[in-house]
Length: 113
Length: 114
Image 1 (cartoon, each protein chain N blue to C red):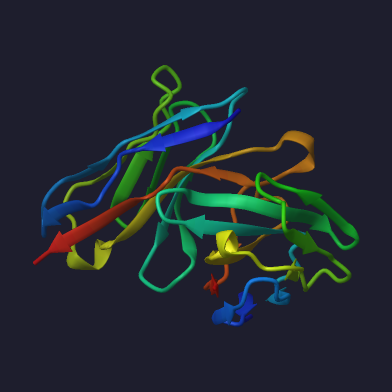
Image 2: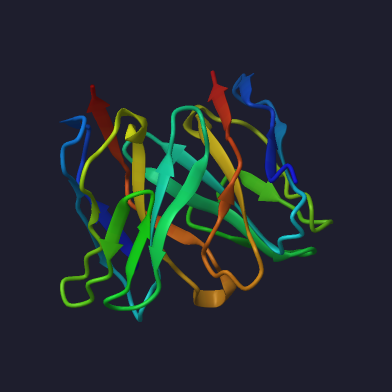
């Protein structure tokens, strides 16, 4: 198993550009989530999904869209990037029956100029 | 709402020193409590957990006890090593409205010097 795989590892965008952060897991986990990590702020939940076809908002969803067409993939879309979205983004998944125990990807470091 | 407060860092210790990282929480109900660790350039990894009051989680020489009366979950290790240098996050598990997310503290950067 590769675990949780995030691509790209690094990305630089200009204000107003769009992009998709990819997240894939091969562990057949139903629950997946996206966090952003900012200095002095810890991790904050952006969006989550409890299974294919189901998504919901977390603490800081504005400016981000998600979809979950398959169990394996949970992409995060920035439609019009802003400097405030400069951050490190982590995707995570949870095995069934193990509440709140999350497996994290290695992260995507995004800079918006 | 739910929140986690942990001591600010960086915390700098010498090898073989005793470690305590304080964590307190505010939550409705009876959340599960976690410590996650983030090594440089990597994602977070679960270090230990406790699911009910008075439970003690332990792993790799680290331990923490779920104290409901003081709403605390302090992380301790008797003798730290250079390889323990990392950022440590205290977190509580939420389950309202179908969410299975975690509420994290801001993280404590631990530096162990040889």
